[in-house]
Image (tube, rainbow, N blue to C red):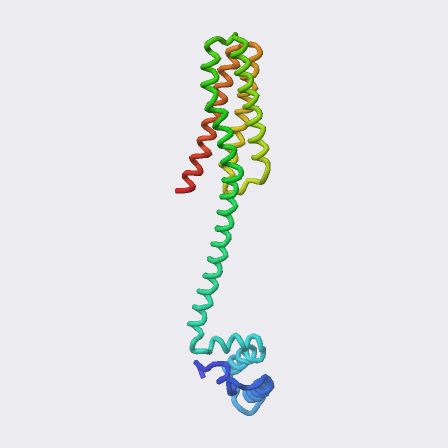
Length: 230
């Protein structure tokens, strides 16, 4: 009986009812009880108790019956495979949803801001070159001030776009670069406006430097997107 299963230990058929299993257990427990006439068998009593603990509980019995099935190992593998497939399916669905959110953010937030920022930054050198012909010429300075007003409007539009929806987690670093880029541009425009008011070249130099920093931040954001694509 060393390698016997629980049904064999209780001397019942695998199709036995719960009542039959209970009766078999009581009969065997009585037979091997130390006070009965038959010689007590401590090891057998342990096996009987263990068998009844499983077969006497319908839920444990169902689980045990599955393990007795010759196809149980195969079924276990199938269940593990199914669980793994479901896990990776859910994970892939989550990744796809995340990618869609990121792509929408690129299209609706990053791209228009990138365009606005580049128009502002890339126009500065030409504007300064035109103004350098005669910084004290009222007409040239008026054109330069109109350019700064356009910059301020573009910057305000970019900030509104940036705050129009939350940034997805996978775009956190890109969004941070854009945020600091817009701040540098705002400060740079302030400096250039001060130059237009008092002709102090220090404001012009500071403004150009802030625009240069903003340009680098914009480039960093683009580079992160390119790396992500690769």
